Length: 195
Image (cartoon, rainbow, N blue to C red; front, side, top):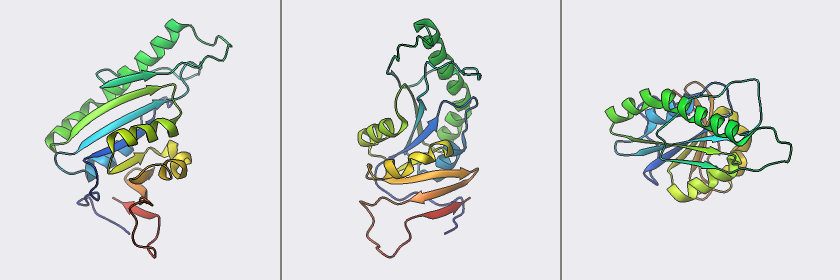
């Protein structure tokens, strides 16, 4: 099924969760861009940036991001002493500042569309579990997964009561309607949305 950009997402909650892989060296905003195009006036978009590989030294540098509604940090030390607490704190702060900077233009777009934008950084969490936990808390109409999180789509879809969209490329998402809400047995489970 192909839809134009005037498509609105089906009704359930008044929020849409956008889950992004914060382990990347560069923030990918395709999922957020797609969500903004498909929300309704007065809806809330909750960006959940998941930094699951916190505390592991990598060749990529950290990023900037401030002003989130909440930051969680779960520290699970392996005993290898890979990073000092100060280095860990710096990595998280840099990531927070990067997202703050990257999302700023999206705040303006949301404001024009009368959509509220919230952002959270979850450091040290498993992407599947924190997505499900937040979905239970927010009761979103949709969860939009960034393409790097597609490996978790079946698990997440099986544990939430809303539809899940998985980004495939810029402007294209695979939709997984909620099993709990599906009443049309003959309908295809997965549809492609091309914007």
